[in-house]
Image (cartoon, rainbow, N blue to C red; front, side, top):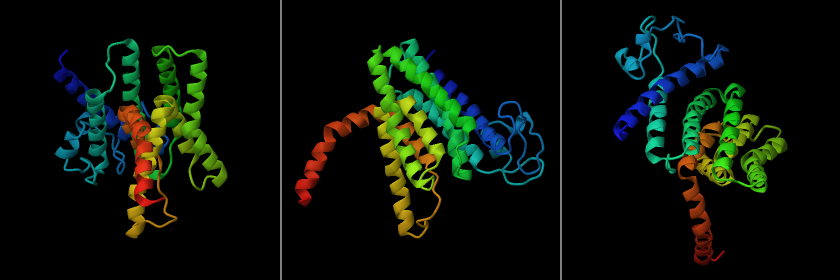
Length: 279
């Protein structure tokens, strides 16, 4: 199969699963079955026909309004579908490892699965400041499968397995648990601790560290201007899950290069900084 056809397949798959993400977010909120319940309008609760559910196209054809009650359909729906499609296509195009072994394909398949679960968490946390266990724990389980797959793929010794596992758990989940414990949940939610556990297992401790650093940098880029412009207050609630998820995606594709770049260039940068500013 040629590359163009594979890109089309990943694009269509991403669009369809993006539509599922939107449905899952709402079904979790109203405590319905994620898989088996039928999609409905969130306003009039009319069951939607297949023609109402074509990713992006249905929203455009309906003018962003429900066919039955004419109330607006959130732009979240096409944006999420587009985002998941881009995740699938760009993951295939930018994947840093050759897909030439069963282990590599398992790794890539798990990565695509992560995209679906993380998209649900991203939207849910952004809307309701919560990371639901119904999605987080399955991701942790998949991360565990990924960790074992990598151990078999790279022929880790028992000692290396234990060492890597310890660091993978401690880099994000351990640090976040300490912050959660000290602040009694005021600084960080326990959902972020569980998400950190997944990230460490799925990425490994090196890329997990990169994801954590990226999430904090992105957070600073958002929060500091927001405080300066008066858009945010010091007591404003800021969902950290979406920042961790963005850091995870970036680290999953470029984590090793970023980690090695920091190891190689980080000390030189700080030497330059110290000499230039006399610190």
